[in-house]
Image 1 (tube, one colour):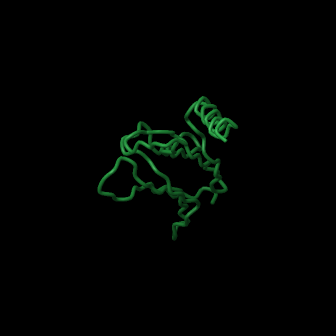
Image 2 (cartoon, rainbow, N blue to C red):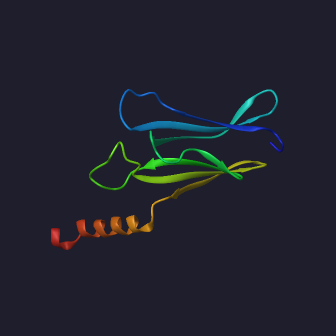
Image 3 (tube, helix red, strand yellow):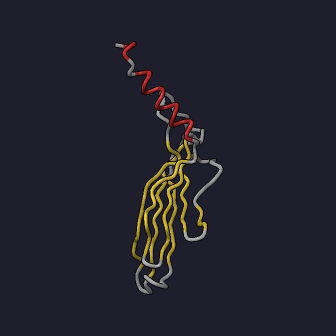
Length: 123
């Protein structure tokens, strides 16, 4: 894989309505004869979200729409954005997992609400 060209394919699924769409990205290596997949992932995005898939240095960053743990989900909202990061190294690729772009205050609120819902006052 050293010195072999790589490319990615990032596509969305066709759908007739809705602001949240499904997508899939894959990273491939070209050995001169054949393209071989290195990694692939399906994800959701909002059609007008502010950021998209990008390469920054040796990182492939895929911005995706995740969902808050609530009773309501907004199809036309960005909701909880997260980057899926893939490190593009000479030996191939390495999945660096997701990085939430929402501040920890949402995590604290979710913890608070979980504690409230399971509190002894409700039993």
